Image (cartoon, rainbow, N blue to C red; front, top):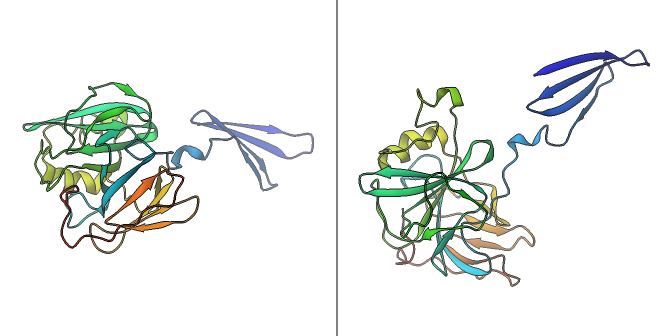
Length: 258
């Protein structure tokens, strides 16, 4: 950060601070602070879409933690009508390798990461730059690092990497290198450090709110406050009101409980 202090003709002193490329200007003694656009925007939540194409129904088993029992609720299970998983925002693909195969994560700006577990027929490669809406693969039951699945879906997760560039070798997991990290460890140690709760977050115009129970919560369409209880089904960016579906008495075959 660079700070420059200059005396104004009024006798007051102006302080200019350049922080991360953004210019903030303060009038010392006058209580005035003018920040250039973006000076405080670094921590704003990204404009994520949902991990599917708009204009279709999606079934969700609800909001839950990675292991489905405890910890930060950073996951939403989804099964779009067309079975295709897509990037919710532009970013860089990071393929995570395990003994049972690979799974996909995408690194976005400001340390944000999204994850896509259980996918099959993966269509992206390590380091690939993808735009919002790019096809990633299909919903599935893949278990490359462990875990379980009772029906084809994508286990969509939200993360924020905490390691700095200088710490990438000493803190590889916090930096996002999850190669050979078991699902049990991912759902515990990794989620504790880098998992971000989806509660209150907006994806594709829908705000998701968790509930006390695992695999529950609500999805509320921001533009008209129509709300769907989860587990349930809703229309992604459809011009019609969302279709609410009562939770099934048993776990649906189309959506897993993990």
